[in-house]
Length: 132
Image (tube, rainbow, N blue to C red; front, side, top):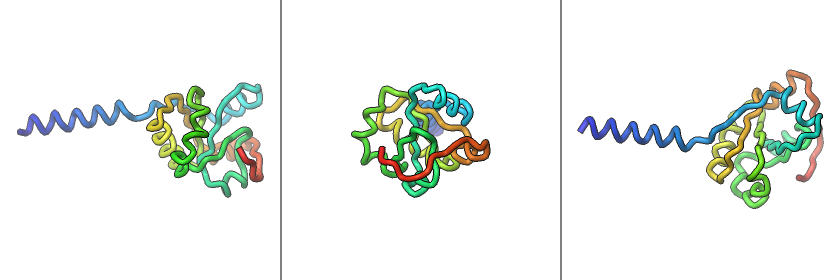
């Protein structure tokens, strides 16, 4: 009985590890350099609209992490692209990355340090509400 229990638990753990999104990382400076060089890149800000309007990365699309499912049609346009996901500190971005993975996105990139590190490095932010 113990052996069956151990095999079941081991199988579940292995399945859990295999189904989580494979996320790479990019530093704020690397992302800034890509933006400045004009490299096409999809940047997804998963903070609230209010946070976004107070300051966001150039070219970012704002869809709050808890609204990703309702914007599935809009997001599908980016499915073939690598997507940099960021929030304030990383918690919401992690949830968003799992949601995106569940929706079939495979090229997800986490912004190291998120907007907190971006600001600490004095990298430029745009402010105001922009519809994307």
